[in-house]
Amino acid sequence: MSRKMIIMACTLAFLLVLSLLEQTIVLRITDTALENARGVIADIREGELKEAMKKSREMDISWDEQAVWLEMMVDHKSTDEVRYAFSRLLAALEQEDSATAMVYACELEGAIEHVYERQALTIENII
Amino acid sequence: MLTGFIRTVILFFVTTIVLRLMGKRQLAELQPYEVVITLMISDLATQPMADVEMPLLGGVVAILTLLLLHSLLASLSFWSIRLRAIICGRPSVLVRNGRICEDELSRLCFDLSDLMEGIRSQGLIGLHEAGSVVLETNGALSVFPSAENRPATRGEQGMDQRYDGIPLTLILDGRVQKRTLALCGRDEKWLMDLLGGQEIAHAKDVLVALLNTQGVLLVQEKGENGRLLNIPALKPEEVMW
Image 1 (cartoon, rainbow over the protein chains, first blue to last red):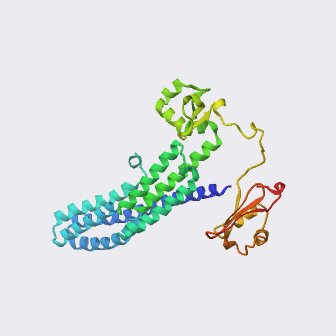
Image 2: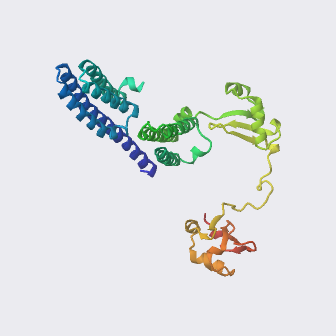
Image 3: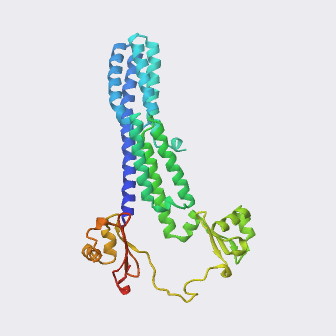
């Protein structure tokens, strides 16, 4: 096998591993965040604003830690949208405004979903 | 600002390595698919440089994917003549036996003035001197003069036809070129003995030393008053490169 073939095979392997790793990391981070966001929505719906506030703060910290990895792979705008949604949700929860908090929690859920949807291997994204 | 600097340095090296891996053809006349790949690479490299919000990995992955596609297409066109014709196209004869192929020119939308320009750029005065003109797949125009306008070869003139190949550079700017020295089957000691015979003690005193295919070592010493020497080094039958 020529040197060039070896380089090409290594490049192909690198690209495949990188792509799979990216899909796995993005899916894992967004899945966890989505699950937590849905928990916050359920708490707000049941009027448990303190519990929602506690979960949101934990989620915010955890998102900031994981966004470091995400931003190596996805457009920073997508992760920033999630950060802004967190800020708005926390502000509404501090004001104990459950209706506005519900709106922002749903917005947060949508922003997290969008991060994964933009990277997912789908026909829509390819076309 | 520093982020942009680091990203630019990384992308510069990635792009340079990729172009290097694509080979020398990428730096000269290109086939159609090579033009596409080169244009895409330059654009892909500049986007993450300018926009720091864009992940660097995205650009690198796209550039590496283009490298793979290039290698795939280059291998396919190497192994199959039919695929090569599809990927690169076929050369077109524009002038045959001094006669312009009108149909071919109109098929390629190749202007007559472009043809004249191409012929002149090859050193011929006009169409009447050109025997054949071929438009190659990389867009270059190959012009062959007609028999009466072609300069006589050494063979036709009955002159000496001894092998006249590329000379080997044995010393360049005072440094002995060990790889080239190995090509003529000699070592540094042999070279220094030859130079010593001309009162040159060190290789660093030599600007350039070339060994031609007649077996003569052409030496120029360093300095404004450096000597030009022709030293018989090998017998013609010992020339093997």
